[in-house]
Length: 614
Ligand SMILES: *[C@@H]1O[C@H](CO)[C@@H](O)[C@H](O)[C@H]1NC(C)=O
Ligand SMILES: *[C@@H]1O[C@H](CO)[C@@H](O)[C@H](O)[C@H]1NC(C)=O
Ligand SMILES: *[C@@H]1O[C@H](CO)[C@@H](O)[C@H](O)[C@H]1NC(C)=O
Ligand SMILES: *[C@@H]1O[C@H](CO)[C@@H](O)[C@H](O)[C@H]1NC(C)=O
Ligand SMILES: *[C@@H]1O[C@H](CO)[C@@H](O)[C@H](O)[C@H]1NC(C)=O
Ligand SMILES: *[C@@H]1O[C@H](CO)[C@@H](O)[C@H](O)[C@H]1NC(C)=O
Ligand SMILES: *[C@@H]1O[C@H](CO)[C@@H](O)[C@H](O)[C@H]1NC(C)=O
Ligand SMILES: *[C@@H]1O[C@H](CO)[C@@H](O)[C@H](O)[C@H]1NC(C)=O
Ligand SMILES: *[C@@H]1O[C@H](CO)[C@@H](O)[C@H](O)[C@H]1NC(C)=O
Image 1 (cartoon, rainbow, N blue to C red):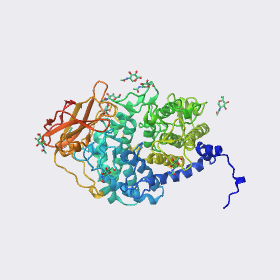
Image 2 (cartoon, rainbow, N blue to C red):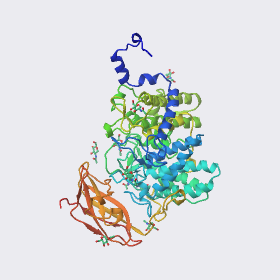
Image 3 (cartoon, protein in one colour):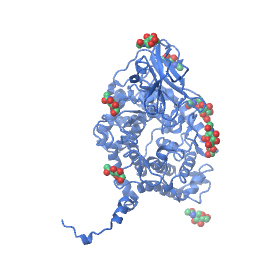
Image 4 (cartoon, rainbow, N blue to C red):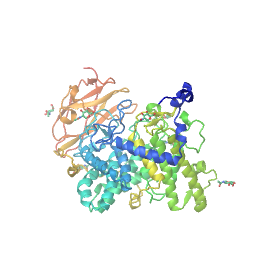
């Protein structure tokens, strides 16, 4: 076709402006409902694209393996994280039970992949005897171990995976497939519940993989997993001994996280390696994943409609107003772009899609709970939150018309956070990890699976799709909390009916290696030795597979450590290795020998000091 040049004269400057300008104009033309409905489809396809065994963006990933993002550099997210995968599956199972039968194969592939992953020996440890390997946060997408230094262990992963599998089991039970749940899926779930029961009272890394301590998000998901575990076990006439820890977990959750001075729930307690305010979307995400439409606002696990949770939401949202240029000029009480936590420096510290969406989802959850109760109590704790969205708010109890007015404002407020995401979503609907705080452009890993999953869970709640996982059946916590754990050592066993391989069950005894090794940023410490878990040899670069844990380092004590089960009664020759920031290795000049306890013997601890130079 011949183009009539007189009708097509567009000055180059205008074209450039259109191409480079923000996507706001195009997006603003559609209403929020239209945006959500089209973006929800894009998001579900985005999730499918990132799951191995057919996902178009992740060729080579094994079937059922959820890849965090197809991005292979800056940052390299071509891995599978237990947490991200389980959160994605919880969403997919909800879509499946809401009628999308086409998702069943993906879910089944996920189940098979997780049965195998549970047995993969990794830097966190093995499945047998003590489940330590279940705390490993991430693997390669071909289901092999990742040997880099990382924030290990992360104890939310097993809890979330158990929840995903239990949600699916509920739907199988409804279609009469009890045998399958009992023989194939429960063994995977039970390993994860054993792990939660055994380790809930020990610290680990948080969901952002930076803070070693007890994270609100981790604890609330652990509690939900144990409660759901006891309910499911009853339904299939099995026992869940580790689930008996649930009341103590709830006791711990409900007693320790409120910062009365700051007026917010803090993200992490018993923290050893950082110094932060504790203002964090960890609590917002925790609350939406502990959300149960049947639970009361004063339930001890901080539902979204809980006064302490709402107070926290305000503090968290306010913390991002002045630190991101794209939020400039947005007044208090108006929606804005939300990051992970104000001290964040990753990629310079920016808003994230999934945290902004989590705020919206949290508000939809809370509205649903107030509506269901037809009751809203404004008290001294949540008053400042309500004043932001309803300036006339005063303490008191509200029903009917006033309640409706406040909830309408809250819903508008929630929609506003989705509109912020709309404003920063490119026209093709692709959701990356972050939003540049200065330009509003997508930043960091592209097509992030968790961003897509969080869009869909937000849309589910906005559409009135709620879940109840059984909070009301949870046992109340004791009056005084105690440090407890369920000793599951020796009970972990591969889910062979789901395809897991057998594992070595010969007797092993625990050793904790600890070394004082001053390091600078970019340097890491590894452990080698003449036993297979330690790479098999000393003074051999090809044996360097076991990174040590930096989680106990303090300014005055640079301690690296690792807990590991080694063949009982066999002495091990071992050596520490310093990995330089260029990746090269410096071997400690000394090799040591540790006498591993005989079968049934006590834990042995080493106390060494790294000596450079040879
Ligand atoms: C698994 O993937 C990693 C990372 O791509 C690769 O280095 C390794 O060789 C693969 N292992 C197997 C057994 O394919
Ligand atoms: C509690 O909040 C105050 C005010 O924000 C803060 O200064 C303090 O560090 C917080 N305490 C803890 C333990 O996080
Ligand atoms: C963990 O934190 C709680 C609350 O701050 C405190 O009572 C407890 O002593 C801490 N426990 C450990 C093991 O540090
Ligand atoms: C934590 O940071 C605050 C504020 O910067 C400082 O006053 C305090 O001494 C720090 N505490 C530790 C243990 O580093
Ligand atoms: C707020 O209070 C003022 C003064 O009492 C009243 O005029 C106004 O109608 C109230 N606004 C709403 C939204 O209830
Ligand atoms: C979608 O748009 C973003 C931003 O313009 C771009 O980076 C990305 O490559 C696009 N994705 C596809 C699949 O076209
Ligand atoms: C273990 O539980 C006790 C009682 O709730 C608590 O004081 C302690 O801080 C917990 N420690 C960890 C690391 O969770
Ligand atoms: C946990 O159980 C194992 C296996 O029965 C036993 O060997 C170990 O001593 C127990 N540990 C503790 C701390 O009770
Ligand atoms: C490892 O070294 C120790 C100490 O030299 C030795 O007793 C042990 O037999 C060695 N283990 C193997 C598997 O060779």
